[in-house]
Amino acid sequence: MLHKAGDPKDCGNYRTIALISHTSKIMLYIILERLKAKIENELAEEQSGFRPGRGTSDMLCSIQVMIEKVIESHKEAYIIFIDYSKAFDSVDHSLLFKTLTMMGFPPHLIVMIQSLYTNQEATLRWNNQPTESFKILKGVRQGCILSPHLFSLYTEQIMRETDADQYGIEVGGRKISNLRYADDTALFAKNHEEASKFIEELNQAGISKRMKLNAKKTKYLYIGKNHQPISFEEENIEKVNTFKYLGSLKTDSGDNTNDINARIGMAKKRTQDLVNIWKDKTITLQLKIKIMKTLV
Picture 1 (cartoon, one colour):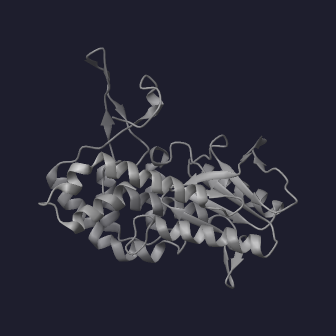
Picture 2 (tube, helix red, strand yellow; picture 1 turned 180 degrees about the vertical axis):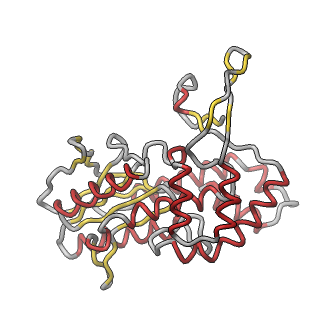
Picture 3 (spheres, helix red, strand yellow; picture 1 turned 45 degrees about the vertical axis):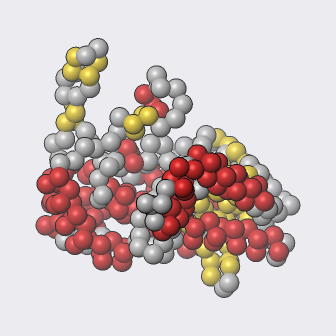
């Protein structure tokens, strides 16, 4: 169990990590290599998570450009940052295998993936004593190289069950309705009606796959002058002026000064914290640059 943040006495603040044998890891790499081409064909252009040649910088640049274009054109837009409740832990195994089958993945590889998840059991240690074992029927294994890809395929099917193509903001002659990096999802709508329909459709599609949206953690930016609050399941979603998405601050004004200053401050702190590494002549310049890019 890995403690993420918050009260260490709260079980909800921990993440399970799968410890996988070396033999299994080799097999998983082989399976992934055989699935890669098919995975690329199935995932939409809007999904950038764990894909070659893509990264968070592409997503952040796209969102910034969209915000600036909406402001320049004096139009309105809702940008909704979706939060799924326990996203990776909510993937239903039987629905995952059905999704892979429906997408046309090779049956023999699906069987191999099923073998990783079928008849899984776990026990907990309580007061230094193990509890009775219980079956694990949902969740992808965090720490497994296949898991991010399985999750992306699972949520891809959820997005397909909405009318996403009918919604969105036009930029450069192309309509963009959503951008995704694994479970970090941003929805784009040109008005209140679109925003309300889109989030309700996504919520219903998610429920059908046992993935529930978290209304309390879902937030949105509004650009324009005719704001109307949006909600789903009779619960209002919080409107914010600034939202931290993929580590970068996005604002409804398009001003990224605070984000730039935060990055500069972070770089200065990391430089001071790792002064011994920067002075170490045995570490190559390329590695030092890589360390800085990773930490800032």
